[in-house]
Image (tube, rainbow, N blue to C red):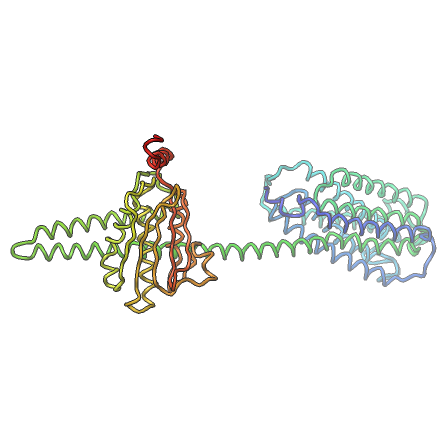
Length: 536
């Protein structure tokens, strides 16, 4: 998605936004229909009212232009630059228009104005804004998704402001000092002449073209609301045409429509900017949470690695120290040295298997598989943890079914599963008396699968945590990181097996690991062996 697709310049309007624009447009047309039949009715002169309304129009257009310039500096769109210049043009030209109104600040108007100056500035005002709307549509249609600007955004804004300011000053001089060069549009300083309506009709047609182009090429939220702005601009011009002069109902009503024209886009910009700020704040919060979560995951991973390799590293140190002690004897006990070094190598391989198991959770699984005997895996795990079981005064009982068919898998990873389950059982039973610490390891045939069970006599697992005990970072141990069982389940899943836990009786829990027997060929052999000789 292009970066501008997230803003109202190219973002399609929602159904709610369409209905809102339709409601505002309908309100403008209803107001026009109510005032139009009485537009020519003369009203009392209220000269001070016009400058106050003009000040409001100038301020709202100035704020709108500032917001549009700010968005231009982000999105670098020529269409936005043209639209911002149009609103700045209105904000500036409204000021001399109000100052030159006869009777507002002086009988003939300030700035050396004549009776025609304010009227012509009004015509320049509406012509310039309609031209800005057409320029917006033209540039938006022509520019690429990521338009290349020949100058920096700051330079473009400065040059645009300079040109618009110079244009307003030039038109003001033309309407005041060069008033004699322009056709007469007011008679007696207030009443229209026939030429006035022709000029206003031409400006209205120019505005109608802007409406047609915006309607034909409307695509975004901003296009939709600019269409409403153009409709309001056209309506106020028609009301002036239907009026009879400066102080008719149509002339007064046109100022109200000018306020609507100046505030619509400002309201939309403020609303959309607020929404974008809210989304940006939410995105920043989510990014911070994600960053903190990643840091926590890295910390948990480091803690898990430390937890998993601490025991084999301690065994390596112990066996290395034992080998040195046996060598220092006179004579050296070479048989014990060999035995200690063998255990040291075995534990070294176990460290490698730990990292393979961690990769099973955090990376790609090890695809190397072989025929593995579940009984051998269980007995090897008990041998590795023999010293730890003895130090924690845990009684071990095994119930291993003989002549089990092998399973297809990675022996190191499956052994790590059993070691992790036994180690968790040892830690769980630390909370009960020594004479009640009993660990049972069982294997048995379960249909076309092998069932391996590890049962402890500890306090058991809270029923509320039983369903998600295998999820990462869920733990029942104080200071635990909750990755051991998650690793075990991942390994078992990748061996097409299942892992579960149930309460033991009278206390403790039983972890079940169910793994499929070897290969389909081995299962077929097993079924054939179960048949009677006469059926073979």
